[in-house]
Length: 421
Image 1 (cartoon, helix red, strand yellow):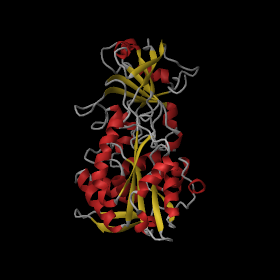
Image 2 (cartoon, one colour):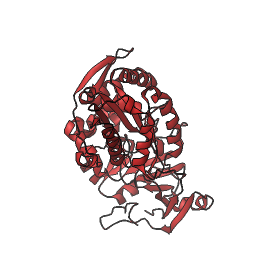
Image 3 (spheres, helix red, strand yellow):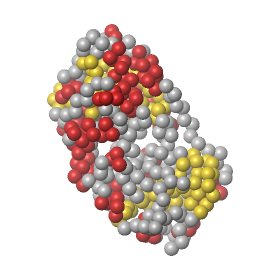
């Protein structure tokens, strides 16, 4: 079969970036005047999630140092629902893999899956909260603000979700995801978050917004009473800064790696146009991708292949790298078992391409609109097929890095990753 020729392009995004992150964290937290609320010797629990947030270790360390300057005793709590196999050890391993260690941050990490029930929502839902965080004198909720991969609303993924799913641990995550089948996302978010703020001594939030290059674009310290309004405002910015595919119509999307450190669904549904339907674009999606081929898992995902069920094709090495137990726990807890479904797989990428290109319609393979990306978080440079060439020439936001050439396969018949020139 003749494959399309591919060229490398660079996307130009509008991307504000914070140069001195520790100084900005200190400045932001300083605006809240927390010294009027925190007494010397009091404990402060600071959350650390499972997403791959740029500079997260630096951000958390700076927050730790702010509270240490106030004479407080901060500690870090992994807050990530059922991730890490639903174990305290697994969750600690995840944040340590991001550089959030006791040595670097200069404070203890207290990891546990144990929760306490602190309230009940008007819908009759018990509100679970991390036991270690519940025993602290104060809690700081730290998280990235971004569009959620499933839910749609004024707030989606951010500080509120950390209070629900992150600090709710496996127990809370299971209940809230089930409740969302009977109530709207915003109903659950407001009722649970209000109960947490009212009962769990939340003293501040630290919202992070990233630019399209996976860099820290904004950090905002938020007082608890302002969580909802401020997160709404930050979500608008986050949506504007989200990385996107260079073209809206795609016959075949090749994704080098998926993983929990990239997105809650392995690959961001907001990017690939699968937010409302796992296997096709809807009229509410900005992007239309006909077929998805996933080539591998990130090392940081530790075998969690949640989200691979959105792809139509994968390869044998990816299937062999899946931890079925961890993937199943996460997908079922999230209320979406199909996320763990295994696509059709072949031994080599070449075999995948030969079969995937027969599923894209009447277009001939060599004229197919194909895009290859490293993952849905890093898309500054991507490979695109020659079918896009004329449009590229009209786009000032796209720069041709290398001219069209044949698809690059190694001796084993596997594609060269985008990151390797």
